[in-house]
Image 1: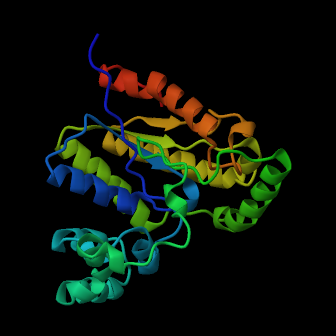
Image 2: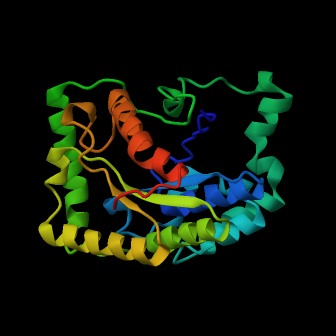
Length: 266
């Protein structure tokens, strides 16, 4: 038997395909070429174009190389805030990175955090993070209802936005160029959360994914119903046991066949 694959989750919390493209480009720039790239698809992130402030909350813009800043500006309708922030960091690095510099050279001058970072709790060795490890049934229902109010309006008169579509197709083109296998996975959702999708929206999504799969010649995996409701926090974020269940099935039905050059059903 061969060696098991090395797997890592390079997703950034709350981000979409735009930053996924940035992360893949960074890997390739470091001459780390994966055998397989799994790209997550979640419809509420595909119907809006992101603003700069969202990107700035998810990555340190000041640490971008010039090429990376150019990549990211392709996903902004107004790149001016990106240019200003990036240029400021380049011209005044001691100010922009003062906490990091102090932490390295004079850690005794840096105040300790009041509380541990929320994003370092429940983080596993492969890069997967969960905001909590358990949830009560009644709390789950309340969370589903809260997120229904947030996301249901996005799913009415649903249209695929320009920027996330561009990012997905750029990722797939990059994989094709470097002969990297790729697969797009429609992420798991609980039954209560899936009810917020109008039938017309599901038809738009199905047509879009079919076109992406045909255009890029990549498999599209619908994993929406792969996880039971009690393994979700809120209908769309997985508990650790849900993540384990999903990962095992993904490995057996998707990753292993692709790495063995077998076909994967759409």
